[in-house]
Length: 33
Image (cartoon, rainbow, N blue to C red; front, side):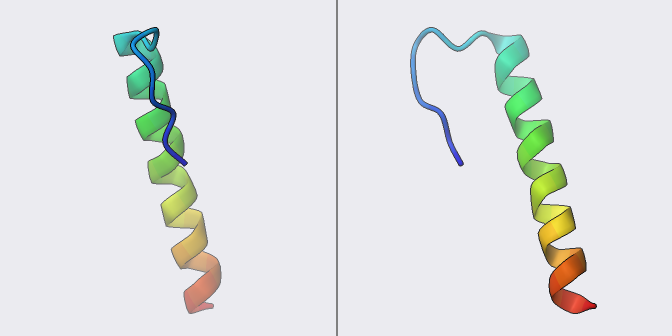
């Protein structure tokens, strides 16, 4: 889940990292249930 491109702005990069972090957290949550 990584979007590469020079057109990505800093704001979009932060948003993507937040989205990825939440996805990892939810994945781990369901995995360990």
